[in-house]
Image 1 (cartoon, rainbow, N blue to C red):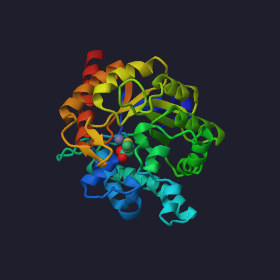
Image 2 (cartoon, rainbow, N blue to C red):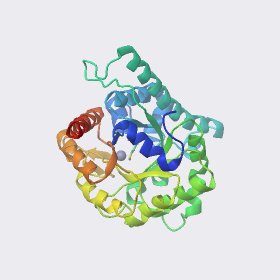
Image 3 (cartoon, rainbow, N blue to C red):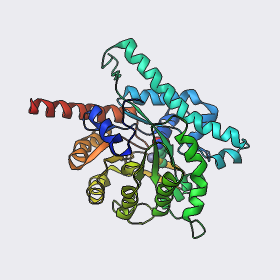
Length: 345
Ligand SMILES: [Zn+2]
């Protein structure tokens, strides 16, 4: 994107200088695609829209940019060469679909910049944020468990036959394709266990991946990652990998985040990222979220400044959060930033 130094060590710190100290990550992509009517009950989940409705993915990215997101995450979470091949696509077609996820996000960013020029004001009357600013496209990589679509994404239990090598072989080509497709970084999201974190770290080094990455783990008890592995050991893997520029937590209930940031801080010097889900519980049998079990946008946002005070530098939302959540995060952070600026002046 041209504004950020490509040295992994300063990539995020340079970006954060330009965003005023904290960057806003987008909200749930699959959630928003469903809200627009997409049926994602499919092994490809949100990646199904790469086949059926790419324009909808672009619209959702644009909605998040207009809600104030500085980073948008591509629709490749559950897009894998193996998954597309199982649907009858050739190897070449499957790779093209992965690239397409990045191209769609880049197109949305271009359209957004065009709108900023057209409107030439920071806030439009209808509440859209149209402010020219550096925007990063993060290429999503979901776990092996997400590809399996059998619940192991939230158990992190893969069985003894799955090793670091199996996982590296599973992700290798996908990561290479996404890294060469024009994304600014790779978002390894919802990482459920230590084995997969290790596989990602080794792949980044061994394959000489040219763009930086973030590692984002999920937790369901506020202490461990979902498999039960030690969060501190998982974060330490990210900490030792030079290509990893940020580490944190996603798709985890907001009530656990404060404690998780305090733990992560003990083992990392890298900027910490946080994009929780709405706190609603997920019913793996029914494959749906249980409505009204989560927190309101107001409650979610009331946590945000506290998360930043204790050390989060990138904040957004995951499943069941929407552009409204992101707009509220943007506004609370801008209020906070201008309050800090006036205190200093
Ligand atoms: Zn999620």
